[in-house]
Length: 195
Image (cartoon, rainbow, N blue to C red; front, side, top):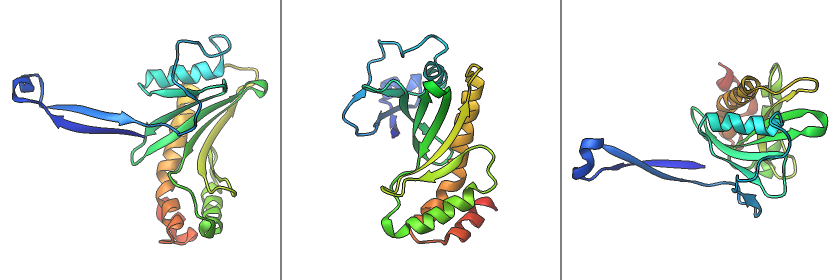
């Protein structure tokens, strides 16, 4: 999560502007996070994860590599309504790439059937991307993916993956949250999201 707050400048600095922004960023609490980027990612300059990282850097987004994993990077992205924890994943052996954004919180055991109904209703008709839930722990994420076997992964393709993913989460997360809290049925939540 990234948080920023406006702070008024002292009078002697107000000729430079009126406010300063301060803040902090947090990441997943997994124990082996690696923030040292002095070592390049594995592979050549056409390595798919390197291309993901180049796109994130072009957007000014901070990302984190997981120690011991050369196939995943994590980052937070501010959508229109949320700050989303995200992961880029590359399966090098299959030339497949995926981008995930995670819904905040977990679906409680008692609301998982309703959440699955909501997810199925949301997924029906989607051409790019899908929502999915881990039945065991209640995590919900949005996935967009691409198979680049025989081709190169471009910055433009990554931008499409990321933008489609974040747009889907922006569209459906309010409805999912209403279902998770029992405020709306799955059918009513989908109707509200899609109308």
